[in-house]
Length: 101
Image 1 (cartoon, rainbow, N blue to C red):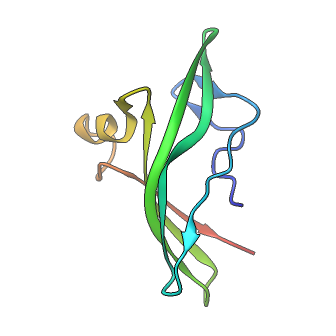
Image 2: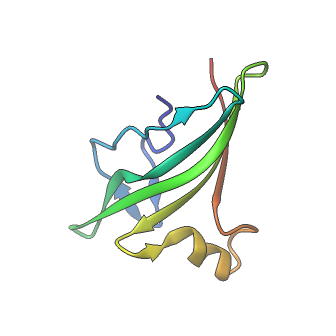
């Protein structure tokens, strides 16, 4: 499991303990899809907000790099889309390149 969301603060919202593991099946060609699934809950001024994740990516076994392209949804609010529409990101999805040991 890769923990991308450990100790993350998202726009002033603290991610609560117990963030979910994200499940994805790795195909033989190194690609994978993350089906929409719960990922974490944030606390903003005492109110809890659940988030889901979906996306896709690739894994390069030669370099150990996991490339993720993913979307976060907070009860119908498309976080990544909003960030793109408001000029905070160049894509309408989040990107992460993680090197696995």
